Amino acid sequence: MTLTAVSKTQPPGAIDAALAAGQRVFGENRVQEAQGRWDGRRNSVPGLELRLIGPLQSNKAAEAVALFDVIETLDRPKLADALAAAGARAGKPVHVLIQVNTGAEPQKAGVLPAGVSELLDHARAAGLIVEGLMCIPPADEAPGPHFALLRKLAHRHGLEALSMGMSGDYETAIRFGATHVRVGSSLFGERKPPESP
Image (cartoon, rainbow, N blue to C red):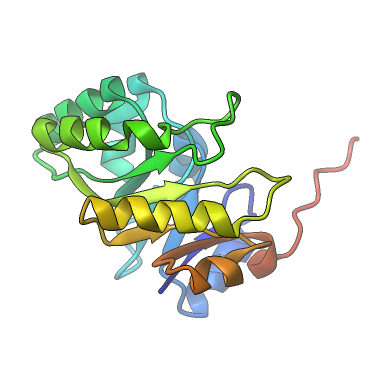
C-alpha cells in the first residue's frame, strides 16, 4: 500500500520535512499550483513520484503530462484523447487512473460506474496506460460500500490499482483493498488560511 501525501497548499517547509523523512509520493490538485511547488524539486529528488488527484481540463493536458507521473482523474473520452496526444508529442507514456463517481453526485467529477467499461476501452485504444480506478465517496455516506464497489469494478476489468481513502477514512479503504491512500491533514495537520492584512 502506497501513501500519497497530499501536498496541495502546503508551505515549502512542510514539503521539505516530508521529503527529509523519506516520503516520495505526493498528490496535487491543480497543475499550475503544482508546477510552482515542484518544478525546482523535480529533478533533485531521486524516486519522486507526483500524482494529479484533482480534476483536469483538457487544455491543461500537456502541462499535466509533463509534470505528473500518474493522472488519477481521467473521467471522459475527450480528456483521454488530449492526454494521449500530449503523451505522443512528448514521447512519454501516460499512466492514468479512471475516476469513478461511485455516489452519482452531479457536482462531482468522475465517470458513473456503468460507464467505466466504455471509458476504459477508449483510453486503452488511445494508448493510455490505465493502472486502476480512483474514487471519492460522498461526504455524508459511509465510505465502505463505495470502496467495495470500486474494488468490484477494478476486479471485473483486471485493474490492480485502487486509489481510495483520505485522512478521514483511509483505514476503511485499506480494509477494502486500497493500493493507494491520499492523506493530507492527517500527515501535515490542518492548513490554516493566510491571515488578512
